[in-house]
Image (cartoon, rainbow, N blue to C red; front, side):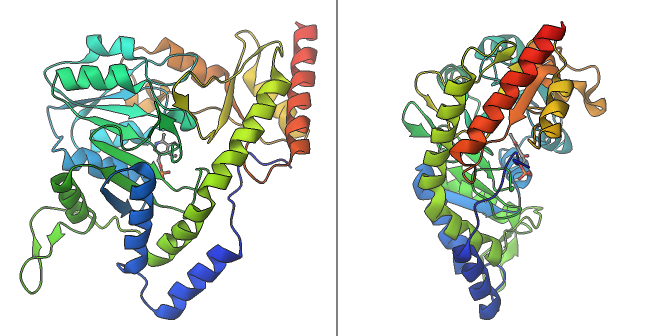
Length: 367
Ligand SMILES: Cc1ncc(COP(=O)(O)O)c(C=O)c1O
């Protein structure tokens, strides 16, 4: 089976975990701090705060910005539903925005109609590792004095106009789930240039506790969303692999793009000027009128794993009746993620590309 994704783990990670277990310091130690420093230096922010998942990072971003009942946050419709869930759990409303069908990212042109006096943030998701079109999004936000939350869950190692994703605006959120570029099992990180915001985030991830007096004081109602030392130890070992993992993904994606060029019935992913993607996922759109699920099943029958791009939030029962997002609904229906990860060989890429070509030309012939 050619897997959709596979974590790149080796003896370094094993050794790092063994050292933590031997040390007996399982939480709140030097490794979490070191992992934070390493991520901060790659993202170019003075502060990074490790948390237990990408969703935890988004949740704390919303809470630390003081977003609550009566407020709205604009969220792209085509993304992991956790993006909207954290807004709604904070008592605010996720206002769903349609996407650009070429990039799958938030379409800046739809924003002016969605922004209201209740808008307290725009969540810009760098979906599949491709940076969102940040300049117009940040300009609209700045003109109205609202922050942008960057969901960089998929985008460690991606850059926008030469600057790392996650450090472009007020707050960045990363995920280290096994399908992401770098993994700690579960895990996440917040990045920010704002020292006061970083302090609030540190308190919120740790019960609202701040170091004051002999025993500390609880200055806000926080949660326990801490990362463990063994997760951080894996993260530190993974950070050493980051440049090579991104470089290999870029090589594999370039080969897939060449081998699938001109393939009928498939819209290939793009990398617009100034947007450098880490190729966390390689997502194509199957032409309207062709059955995406049949293509996925045919790939599976050839031992090639494939799945949908991601979900349309507006199509989920929890969000019935929200804003209409036709491009997102189409992407939900027709998008297909193909395998791409550093453990794939050049031969695997050719197997995937020729399978896609054969399946689609058969499907086209039958039409
Ligand atoms: C765009 C996006 N945001 C947020 C998340 C949530 O991350 P996690 O699974 O680490 O909670 C994911 C991952 O599934 C994601 O793809």
